[in-house]
Length: 573
Ligand code: NAD
Image 1 (tube, rainbow, N blue to C red):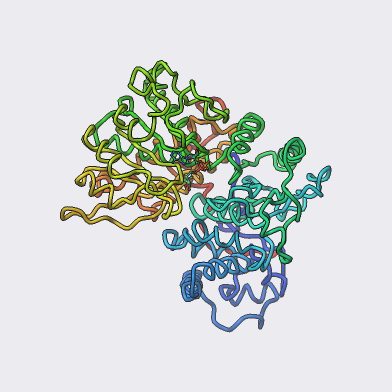
Image 2: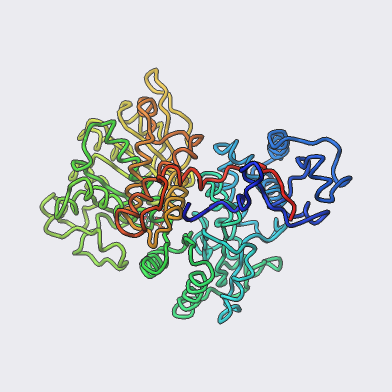
């Protein structure tokens, strides 16, 4: 089958089943996380591999090891200690680490990823134990290809790279930002089954403008002010060319770059190699999926939605672009498509008569004539409340990072004009949320359909329990990556994210919708990811960005590509 994504199946055993070739013996084997099974090595394997006597007597199953490791991690006193415990497990035994993560994905995701990973990035130089991933600095200029060839694996298919400048909502974290690519790739493996030996986390450590890091004598990064301008661009360019050269089948995910840089990189490299930005496109698709699921519940077709987005940053603009792609595919075009989405930044509705400094905002700005036609002609009266009253949005999305901006007055004004207001306060962390679900539900007398960026407990209202779906990017990016890799797509397009959004929305059951949830439970993430991957792969073939798969159907190819953390029979080599 094309694009074999399973390095754990290099050999076929005498019975036709898969076997794992183990190139290490003795003590060295026990220090190699990709091969070490510790107490799960059988008596025969211990003899074969020269490790008799190096382990306690009893042989554990993977399930027993998983229970033991989980209990060990949960015994730690706080989330950061659990993060450190899980990282240590990953450094000892990758199969076991992923077994534990897959078995407890809902519970451990907030540790391996946001919010705990943010703390781990901040504390990186103090909690450092063992290096993971690669660190490229300006001192490698001219030799980046050579440096990248030191990567621990040869057949890298998936790279997550950050320049550490906008780590979650925490700003410039310098070298500590590597925690983000590490966490994202762990989720890729847990959700999409991309084999860990085909993933590579990368920090483009171009310095930091965080004064606390620059003056910390334990700081582990390149201790200089951030590289900017042409020097920065040429370094990133050398990096991209090295990736293309060394790992020609790899997908490159840009992660946690500052706004303008994020948009620039996305546009510059879009046609050069398969690449995308999860902050922009993943967020957008997960929000779009929520809108599609909500339209099933409200009965208002996508083409009749009026969408208002508060916040014109990477997330808000990405959501706006994605929704336009989706509404276009649903049949809207021309002005009707453009006016279906309105975006507000801190100065109000984006209108082309005001000075819009940021280029990436212009695409979604309205014309002054249309703003005037809907009663928003006065530039001083285009705030959220005025816009809600004038535009009567069916959907209100918050990506402003400003807590409390969805006020009672705004929400009531919306609810007076539509039957079931769809409201997504997406800003993270919880403290930055535009409004909390309990208020949104109370202010709309239980009518609002709510999804959030951060996890929230169910809301009890009027004798019913309403589950609040979390628009977590982890629903989207693993499926997009898997779909792209399975067919070897040459580019990643907005249409692929639209298909991913539709596939995610299709995974929301009637039972989910009945409880108010607009996303499936996170515990279903592997089956959701597989469905998204198929939809993305189909789109890649349809658009000509990938060749049709030779022999075998996409469902089968996707399932085959997903590594399930388990121990295969061993063959010593
Ligand atoms: P950003 O800094 O790029 O953008 C923020 C935008 O909000 C800017 O355009 C700013 O002008 C605007 N803004 C600030 N104050 C405002 C106000 N009072 N009214 C209207 N607009 C205002 O940040 P970002 O990367 O776009 O992220 C925005 C928020 O979305 C963050 O809180 C982030 O955590 C959240 N987010 C959530 C998810 C998710 O839930 N899946 C994913 C990505 C980002």
